[in-house]
Image (tube, rainbow, N blue to C red; front, side, top):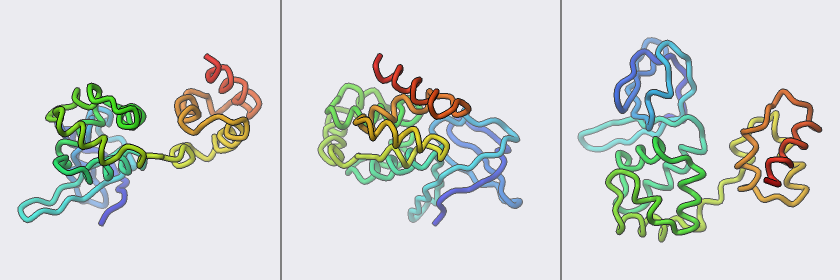
Length: 184
């Protein structure tokens, strides 16, 4: 089982990329292959699906996407090839929010997801997607996250603004910017 692969993108296709690592080219299905650039080096989190007639790799930009993908494919009727396009047009935050708020219309905008499957996703996953914001932020922002949590802000609120703040600012400037964004 693979967790991630670090390598150079050698080819971009309409629904996949070829990632070369140590002379081996891995075909990895991704939500948005045009996020990557040829000859660019990337760390891609992967999920390996092994079936009787198929052995496929599905790739993600970060561990949060991969974790959400694994929860989505646990839903009856939602396979890998139906779940991966959800990340092309929807953010992880948007998908989680839609599930938690029971927003069936948002889920139905994804290919091959109808009313019945959208309801099944909500039924199976609502309340089970409490992703911790500390898992997705870099170490340089962990102090900022701790300060904001100490001020009583919820992880969801923090997660919505933390990536908009320049890590090169001092911690005091980061806190001021975060508070400005949170108070909008």
